[in-house]
Each structure stands twice: as C-alpha cells, then as structure tokens.
Length: 133
Image 1 (cartoon, helix red, strand yellow):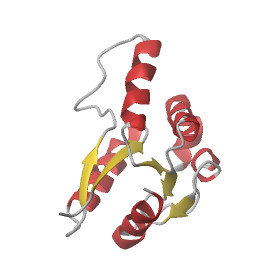
Image 2 (cartoon, one colour):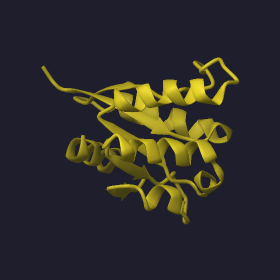
Image 3 (tube, rainbow, N blue to C red):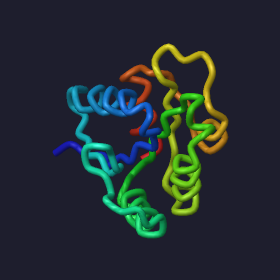
Image 4 (cartoon, rainbow, N blue to C red):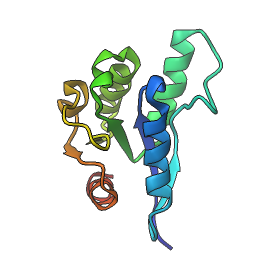
C-alpha cells in the first residue's frame, strides 16, 4: 500500500484560496495519498485563548511528516505563520516553501526556514514532499 503523507500547511487565513487550491492540487494527484492537519476557516480551533490555539497547532504540526509554507509575501506579516514555521523547526519537522501561482516575490519568513522552496507545480511539490517527509 502506498504511503499516506500527513501534511500541515502554514497559510494566511486572508488568502484561504491559496490553501484550498494547494490542497486540491495534492488531493487530485494520482498515486499520492495525503491527509491534512492544519486549522482552516472551515474547521477552526474555536478559542480566543492563544495558548490553547498554540497547543493545538503544536499537536497538528508534530503529527505531520512535513510542513508546507505558502510563501506569498503576506506570510511576512503573519505572526501565526512565523510561529508555526518556528515550531516546525523546533519539532524537527521539515518545511517546504511553496510559491503561489504567478507570484514574483516570496516571503523571507518562509524561504529562510524552508529546506527547499518550489514553484506552484504539482510534480515539484510532490517531489519535495517525498524528499523531505
């Protein structure tokens, strides 16, 4: 049976379309099984307590084989993305940066923490996941 990769995607809630598009890209790739761990607007962590949210995110990150960081410039302004990526490094979970489709500039918050940064291309993303997970 093929391996199922558990993935946490660090993303900005203001750009949830990038998250959904990336998840669809990976879910629709033949012979590649994925499950996702991140919190989303559809399934949020219902709390205003930052410590509780961090505890839940830590658990989700630690359950993952790899963290994908969506490397749009907006990541540079997201305290949560910075925290998630730093937590992945602390937990020794590899990070792969994914440059959003059509983006010319990327966030150093993601690129400086990633083992590898790939363009928005299914095969490049899948190859990086397999390499680092």
